[in-house]
Amino acid sequence: MFNTIAVEGAQFGDEGKGKITDYLAKKADIVVRFQGGNNAGHTVYHDGVKHALRALPSGIFTPKVINVIADGVVLNPQELIAEIDDNFPKGTKLTNLLISSRAHLILPYQIERDKMYEDMLKDKKIGTTKNGIGPTYSDKARRISLRVGDLLDKDYLKERLHNLAFFSNKELEANGYKTIDEEEVYENLLKYAEVLKPYISDTALYLNEKIIEGKKVIFEGAQGSLLDLDHGTYPYVTSSSPTSLSIPLNAGIAPNKISKVLAIMKAYMTRVGEGPMPSEVNNDFANIIREKAHEYGTVTHRPRRVGYLDLPILRYTCLLSGVSDIALTLFDVLREIEDLKVVVAYSYNGIETKNIPSNPKEYAQYKPIYKEFKTIPYYDTKKIKSFDDFPNEAKEYLNFIQKELGAPISIISLGPNPEDTLLLKELI
Ligand code: GDP
Ligand code: IMO
Ligand code: MG
Image (cartoon, rainbow, N blue to C red):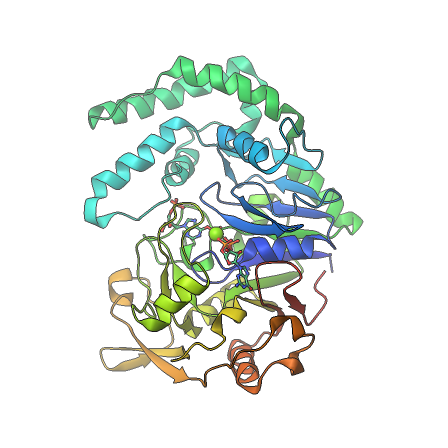
């Protein structure tokens, strides 16, 4: 057994991965972001200050923790520099950050194309964050994108950039969009290279050495399992794999080096962007929760769609990702909420099912079958020191979930700050 744990969003993103990662990081040695890019918005309250992290791992505020941006991430260098400046005193050189030379760069070409593809899709759009995520991953597969390590070789950088600019500008121009000046991008990249140079390294090698030494490592997923490119509600997904399944490939470690998988679950469901969400409602339950928990996107500020907790989705995540433990977040939000229920199965064409179909049009027609729960009365979250301190109505909800999912709820989160966390089992 290695001292490693995956932190994975079990729904459609925004489950509180940042909060839980920062909380667990105090006991860890290394935190690794392994996929996605600045489409993520991870909220962390550290020492009472609110931070919205995009590409930086959520262990960044704990100085003894080394934070790794691994191979599978797509990185916007300009935005990363801005993120460091926004979250640390001006001119700070982080001593606890490593960036993989194999991570791919998001450049203006991919951002423009992300916007262009969304425009062209019109009412069939995905609702992306328009940060160039999809085009960068597709350019990676087409073998025309640039990598972080390319910043260290000026001539090679120019060569690679020319290739990307050639294909991208041709496409932008053909569709009536403004082309992007290659020379200007190159000059900017040389400036970013100077700032990022000290962080660039072979992170796969580093991680393997440290895991074997017995260091405590957290792999922090971005997005959520239902936004997984392969296993989510395709095409309404992101362009990487947020599940634990992708960690070996994206961090460059073997599958047997991941010891635990912690699924982060909101006590209800939210989704931003397009795509099916059977438990979505537009009623008091949704409206009250949206305001109480401020369910608006961290990145795009769009109102999040709200629904009841969906157990078929969570079961699917638990099975696919080998979930060993659950962190239930935003549980405080359910206090005094009326009309509390969870989805236990779906009905489709008169047939009951617990499966998630691959066709999103079919999935959009699934009607939830619910189990109702009594309203959880108000309780003071500060007085909850053990599971037994919860009101009976809360215990019933929690027990039902862990029994149905076959994994223990090892963390219950009762507020955005680290001190609002009930740890029921040591995880790292
Ligand atoms: P992430 O993307 O998974 O890191 O989640 P986000 O940060 O995008 O969204 C989670 C939101 O819920 C943030 O505003 C957090 O500050 C907040 N939050 C996290 N855990 C809790 C909790 O247990 N209770 C409450 N009330 N808010 C929480
Ligand atoms: P965190 O890490 C919620 C959604 C977008 C869109 C789809 C594709 O904060 O949980 P993309 O820009 O990735 O190509 O958009 O995925 N999306 C997220 N939704 N939380 C996120 O990240 C998300 N990252 C992407 O809204 O529907
Ligand atoms: Mg988020």
